[in-house]
Image: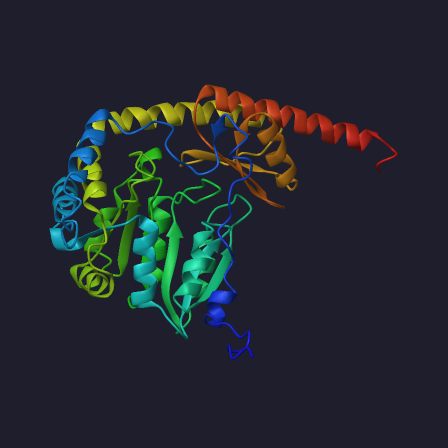
Length: 367
């Protein structure tokens, strides 16, 4: 006789069951160029690789509790005290720590939409309710509407600047006006994952002196080419840093990742040269798409946004031409910037896509 329990299974919290799933790029096993994850097209330098290899020789030892060496290097260059810097296993991990520490059940988190697709997932994990504020006609944050969405239950507002996936940017003066309207008890997270690719008016780290409720969130995954190492950092008031460190798991950054980030942080000229190449290629691809009739917002990231209702169809055509992209069906396609060959493959795919649509429109048997 089978005495085993019934077929019941453990169930997660209702919020976890309802979470959207992070999308995956299609066709990665079929393409020559990967333009779907906003990675750097340039591998880490030999100095970075050597630093990481050297650190691997001591993997039997724990890393420092809070990534002390990297914290010190960041603090020195940005001219802030070390107690205003926190590092972790990617900016996404740090954002999750913030939402768990400052939001939670019965609270709300305001963010723009469309924006980074991980936001609704992390908000749900924290047990909060997400309030999405649509972008304007130019695919930019509607800052006044975001202020209007704040209620007594709002604990966090997330600003993605430049915005992923549209690439649109917020002017410093507009950001200052927005911050002046947000209640001081609401945490404002400035997600600046792509700031290095933007012509910068100001370094928003200076905002910390005026707005103690602001957190500046950045990453080594993009311009520094360490997506596989998972390193991010944030800057905030010491009180916020203390609360985050108290609630985050210890040893949050591996010693190998820290060594690579410290080495990459010391290669500012190389980083800027790599960024300049991406920005030039971004202009080439955007011009090519514009000449084909697409409205391409000016991008401050290492990617461009193609507005296209038939996004999945365009994605499939790109894969057939040897390049992966990220499709958001019904909205558009995000293309990460890489080599000239990848850009030409995307443009060739767009040409085929447009020609096929024209043939279909002219074929009365299909209408």
